[in-house]
Image (cartoon, rainbow over all chains, first blue to last red; front, side, top):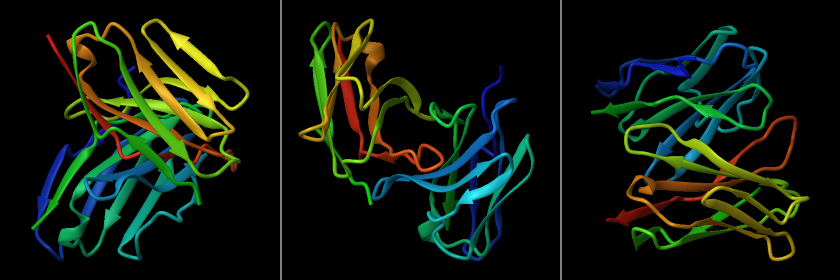
Length: 112
Length: 113
């Protein structure tokens, strides 16, 4: 299995621009998570999907952040407009059973 | 909500020595405690986990212990090897329809040959 796939691996953008991060979970996994990792705040859960439905979005920082999962094999995390404080590594993870979470390689986002 | 503290933030050992990383949690309702290893440029990977009905679990050179009364759990790595060098994260979770993991701040382990 290829594991969780994320794209792009690196993204550099300017403040105010829209950013879209993409994730392909492991086939057969029905749970998908988006996390953000920063030096200051560590690893934080942003949103959790189960069977393509958003279940818990309490970690989404503000309305500038949105996430979708149109089907079982694809999810996006969008930031619009982006700000320098959004700079972080964003991870997508999937799980078959809601226990072990399999993380992707992450997208390193830099907002100038 | 849950709060997880992790110590130490960095740990340097010689190859062959043991390494111990400790975590404490605040919510007594938490019942699932995984440990993740993150290598440079990669996502975290689960290495071992323990549930609140078990006091200790071993898997080859790694073991985890849990003290529910004191609300702390620890990761033990024996016979460390240079490839064990990475950042280790503990996490705590209470089932609320899913495992909502709250992570510790991480421990950077460096194993010197």
